[in-house]
Length: 241
Image (cartoon, rainbow, N blue to C red; front, side, top):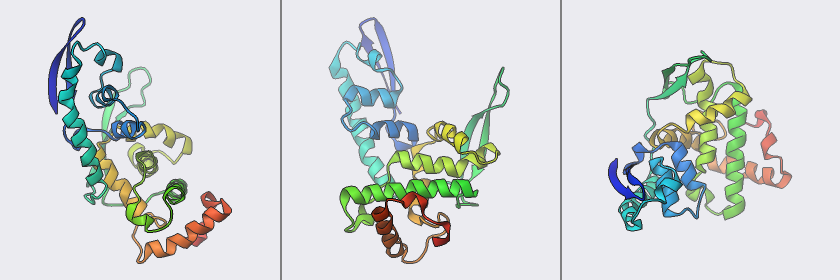
């Protein structure tokens, strides 16, 4: 993390900028990926947590250039992170308690390596549909030739899959599709270096979502072709797994 104090039109502004991926949350990276034409000030705002209007009041625009190298470095690092297989042993969520009057934050540790299958059935089917749609969208855009060699799922899809995987484990509640949607906000708080390798595991292990199969891509491709032709990829039968 690098820190600078810059002069503004009405005083000074302290800016802290991450320089390593393990200092960035999944939510921050999602915001960056969602804006392909992002400006320098918008990128600095997302990474520093400082509103754009405050950054716009920095007296000397050239002062912002010192953060440009950090932003560029992070963009390169995320490319290599897609190739990482270092799955963390546990994840820590900071959850608000059930007391509505004065909710207290509690830390919940979730073991990851003990069980890398998506459970229960509702979460499994939802995750399968998310991954199916993401792969089909990639093939539709880039074609089928060697698509698996170049396929990188969007961070939004990764976040949705992780919400399905972690919801019951982190909250101790029964599966609820509606509640999982709300839980996405908690997943976005995870460090991107923790979140992306776990989500990559599930995209790699699709459609089983637990243990990789031999010659997986060769069996999956005909299924995807059939799904695109019938436009019913979201309704694939469980029996075909």
